[in-house]
Image (cartoon, rainbow, N blue to C red; front, side):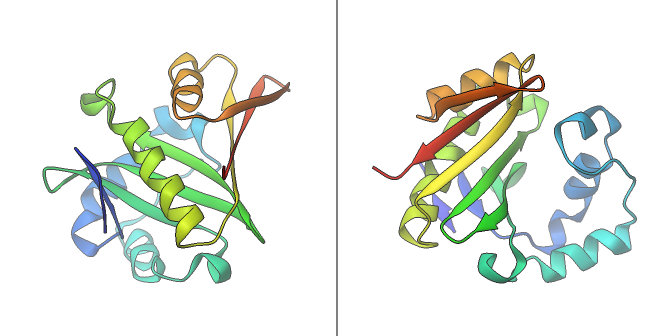
Length: 158
């Protein structure tokens, strides 16, 4: 578990199933992810069971963002390649605009660079997603390019 000032990042556990199902099966969030389908509880329980597979093997890893021992979001690593990975983040609406997403990204980058041995994190954000564009810039990601209505950002180990 990674502890910050206000939140912590931890592994998925079975008790997260209802929160995971609520986020994954919310069609209004599908535009921000790669999958657009309803997951069964059994599929998500299987996902949780396999979620501790190391990043280098699974090529992805999901952390739960906890606030006061309650899950409020997820931070994902995916597209792992050698010493880099892509980042995705979701914080439930009730807990947005409170600094939790920025703190999550800061904890994640520290962990990625010092434990996973990565030296680069990247993300793509819809050009119209003003909140996320501001978030990644505020978390020290640098604008790289704009392509096909997406803004691409990069964060490199200093």
